[in-house]
Image 1 (cartoon, each protein chain N blue to C red):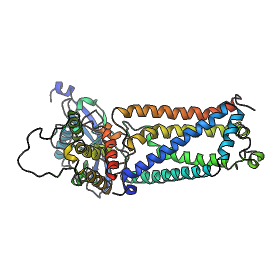
Image 2: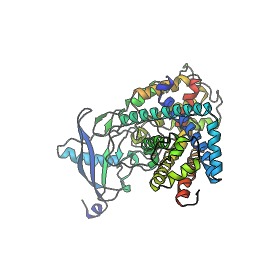
Image 3: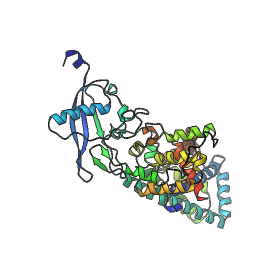
Image 4: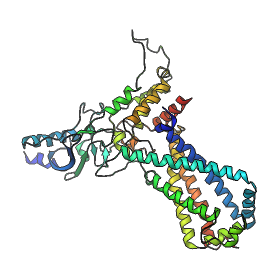
Length: 254
Length: 221
């Protein structure tokens, strides 16, 4: 390696949660990430570390990832105590190493919540979020030829509101950041995106009741309005959608 | 899903019972403030309340019910929440949660203990600082009784500490109430949070003024 590139690289100390399986005990292991540049993303930095581990004949660190563009919601790591690292509206794949200094120590942990059992190392099972969607996160509609655009007029404000809620990528950072392990921001966003639209009205009462029941059955906690979820959300989903969920629930009782 | 077993339903109950207790501390502060008008005003207020007879007991019963529901679901939700989030992160960094929001259960427990003590002191009148004539005559000279107790520094300090606890509990609780019953959006939440903190501060100053002014010798016989 040339002297020039050495000058531009960083060496970091990683303290990573390693756990062999769901029921196995976990522990922190310390690794050194070498030759990391400003241009590496956080996941690429882990790729570099894993390459080194493989060369040494050691088990690489298991972590979830897919699009690496900040849109799929698969990456899920708690960096220094905050889901996705705590930079505004940033998934961990879009967290760049320019934000870290040479010699920094970084704690990397999986999402921690009872409803998200650890599969291995940093990978957790977020099937609970899918089960909440299956309980009511859809509209029942007869399919057929595509309807004319604007056949159902929707006020711009409602469309925007629904789209804001639908921005949720279901990564689970809200649950991971919540001191109560609650999934109210996720469920709130999913309920609100339909509640704002005419297509969502038919099943509105049933939807909110079923999704809330599933949320509880999955073992998520109760919201106590800390708003950590909103701060951790890489898509900036607002807690107004939790208030909307509460409203929709009360409406469903009438 | 049934209201009492629903996560949101139980939280709405927390909000409604909390709202009635908020209403109570407001009325109580207004009543207490008659002490600033003079000894006669506080004693007249006490006489008026006393003369309501059964109405007072209906009100007490209602407030006890509100308290019991609030305490019961408060404890239950807290236990469920710690079970839902059993393992903590190595570094506990918080982005938006506040000291007040994270200590609701503890400020709640402290307030409940204070409430028991406060009732034993000025309602049942069995604490050692209460003079025998205040025990014999009800309501009697409430002004003299309050003055006698708050002249003891420790009693005043405990009272002010309890009001600081109430401040913490309400500075999170008021905005939480609005959010839970769904009367909240991104425009109103910051304002409701600010007003909630101001109201909580008003309770702290208003209630604490009584022992502080008594200790300072400004309120006297």
